[in-house]
Length: 97
Image 1 (cartoon, helix red, strand yellow):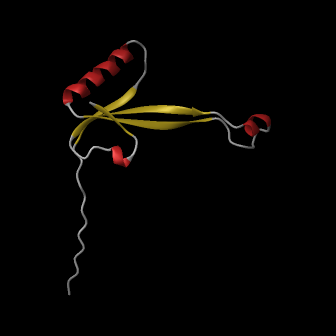
Image 2 (cartoon, rainbow, N blue to C red; image 1 turned 135 degrees about the horizontal axis):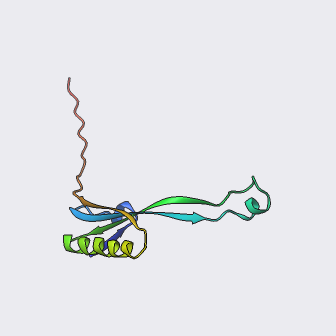
């Protein structure tokens, strides 16, 4: 099963397999930047990372194969495949005299 992670609450707490995809999003400029250069905000692109978590290695491998099949057909998907083992961080405060 694939899970799209877009917030901390979505992030799996158990060991899982993941694919991180690197993309960009084009943001068009506002009207003022087109009619009065130097004003408003210009068109630009922003980097976006998409995190997909998988419960099983088989589902992860199938997703990687699908990406590579698409890349072979001319699609250009940049990604990293990861095995993730989240750890819980605890803080201990100790006072001694």
